[in-house]
Length: 316
Image (tube, rainbow, N blue to C red; front, side, top):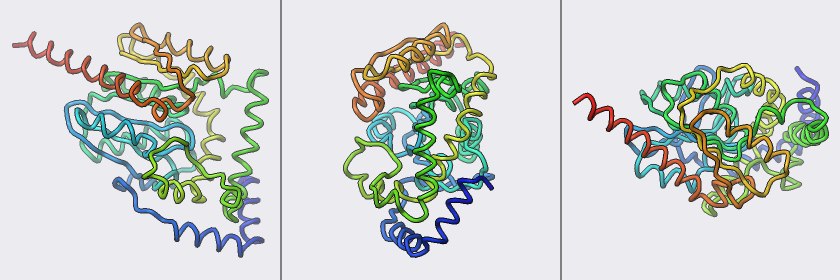
């Protein structure tokens, strides 16, 4: 057991009245999941599955985020395709027994869901921020199943390397997620109103965020995902290059520091069929200007449908 885990459990026992209060608040605020719970080999995964069609769009949320982050995207895309969003680890309504939360873990989890639902390719993969790492890894591991890839203000593996440029930011972030994890049992993050999750979601999800944003599992997942981020970056660094004809759209937020923008440019060289769109937003393009993401997904769906139709015409 790690030192932060020992400190967390010890604090939970010492502050037992606060622990019981926090657990009672979780129970009081509990909200039913908007999607379904799927049992995989190591987890109970909450996923929202909607729409229908020959193309399936997989939505992977960013660090500390969940399936409902796609509340503006999924309903629109569901009109023309099948769409899956889900909660990693113990974020949201999911619960896992996995000891790690790497990008490979995410790929394995979503593959089990696809197998359970008997959903066949082609897949369009959409990854926001940290979630883009697992979508890139998926595309690398299963090149013949992926028809398109969208990287929305995607994290690059370079930012998890302990370089002079990154060290200050990494240490600051480590302090933040470790504090949240250690104090989550006794409810200090709740007292400070520092919940896990993203801003700008539709008002109808306020009650859900007030529940899933304060569960001990959410803070544990945020901590574990941070601890495993170096491993996730290594998985990308050692993965096979993407298929060079794979259509890739890199959506980059303009309101970001120069170091982040520099890494965005690196993503534009992933394939010979990559384009970049600059969005006049902050980091959460799908929440601040969802039309950009919706239009990009629809573009890839049209490309796949056109390609399939051409193939049918050639063979007929």
